[in-house]
Amino acid sequence: MHVLAGSLSSNIVGRPLQWDFVKNNWDAIVSKIGNPIVVDRFVNVSLSRFTDEAAVDEIDKFFADKDTSAFNRTLQTVKDKIRGRAAYKKRDADVLKEWLSTHGYI
Image 1 (cartoon, one colour):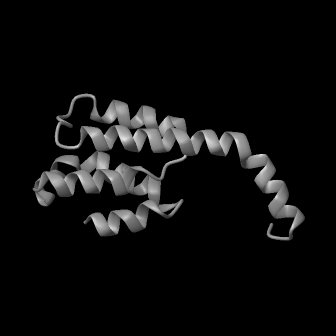
Image 2 (cartoon, rainbow, N blue to C red; image 1 turned 135 degrees about the vertical axis):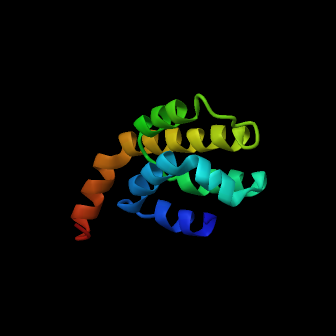
């Protein structure tokens, strides 16, 4: 499951769809995976590719009433990665778009 989750989270279209699926099926996912180490890995590969601060808020809300003790450290790392990507996107998106345009990529 975590291999498929990694592939979906790499896709800009698949990422939010997968997150919706995870939110709607969390108990079944955890039950199916069973192993806390694999749940930890699943959380990492499923969520770490978001690029917007709003995703951090959604993650916090979703996990607020759940036991995250088996993957809490990874959850914090995931949120840090998202914050870093969001900051990079905010800081450099316009410059990067200009460079891509100047060099004929868009």
